[in-house]
Image 1 (cartoon, helix red, strand yellow):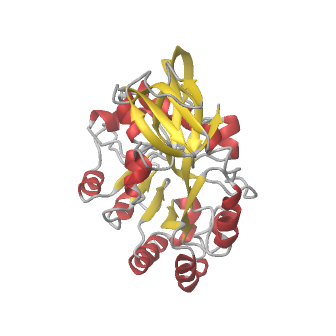
Image 2 (cartoon, one colour):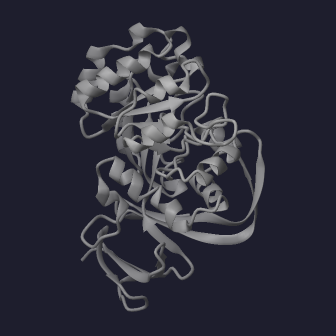
Image 3 (cartoon, helix red, strand yellow):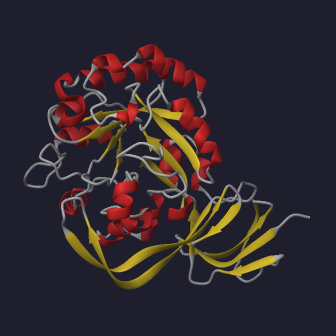
Length: 366
């Protein structure tokens, strides 16, 4: 007989209160509160549960600097059961990352950097010869269950004199591999309008709430028509907070304009985890509560929405018969300072705090 855990009196984000029974890492029952019995009963009164959080944009290769970190430090220890490394590796080292991630408790997928060198340098698209078509195709064929898309960082400091050409090459590689693109946007050149016109349904714009001069909004706060057109044709909008890519001012403009909240991701790595302004997934989620989104909207953006983008909708659901991937968290009352990437500090009276996770059927408490 295996281990049976009963999580009693959990509140789901839709308002229901339930008991969840987990046998040998599998959810075996979801029942009305106070009714389930089992070997280990944990009273979770006052706690919320959602399907395990998914962070669609992190940097999880330990030995890369500055954009690197330990998988579980930014995964299960943050309440994140699944993370997507956003282009830390190109074809040269994706195999080593594939192997390293097998030692982690956190489930990991990868976006393959179209530059074979990945983030060994931060100008990885400045030399077009580093975009090696044959190596990209070989890597994608070798790791079909691990590589879920391609990553291209299209901002001036990365592409330098290459301009828009790396994105055009990325578009061709996307079509050949039938994998979507995640495109990092930032400082011009290239102009943001030139970037947007190359993106198709299923592609991802990450850093869409950045406050740089090349951002997605007019000076009066209204969205660029190119942004509206991209969203209408199915381009996915991802937060990708990071050190320099989230602005409260722009986020308020997006909300006022009715721009849909697709996925909230952190773009976390060692530096902005330890020194801010990211710190943690819960800290980033709290910023969206502060902005006026409901708890249900916020949690959907780290559960159901990224799971659907990954083509793995089961990761965004709590269902009997599947492995337990759950994030347990509380909504705390208290003053907390929140800082964006531009040094703008806001004060909230409520914040999200992670209390534990079931990752791949195993419990880790916060």
